[in-house]
Image 1 (cartoon, rainbow, N blue to C red):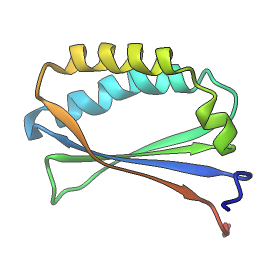
Image 2: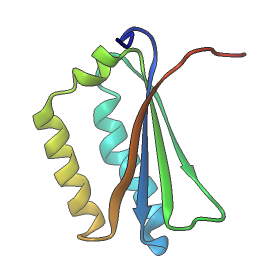
Image 3: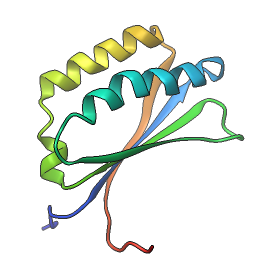
Image 4: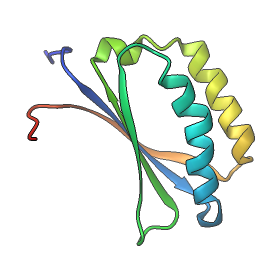
Amino acid sequence: MQDEKGMVIEWLKFRVMPELREKFVQKDDEIWTAILSQYPGFLRKEVWISPDQLDEVIAVIHWESMEAWKSVPADVLEQTDTRFAEAMGAGNQEIVGAARYQVRKRYP
């Protein structure tokens, strides 16, 4: 059985129309990060882009614990997802990978 205590990383990989990548990063900050950061246990978020993969965006969200991550209400997630999809336009982005990780060891 996995230990559900300790920092958890939510990792999401998105495929985005290359010409909309910067819009994606901006709208993600304005919509998703603004909502998630209101919840206890949200620690920080990083958005990674690659100079080699222009159609890819990686979001890395750090949560205090699995419990904190899962405490965000499902209806809030659905409403936020709808709002983000409307801001980006239909078919311009999709999640192509998702994973969760536990921080086993940190180095300064």
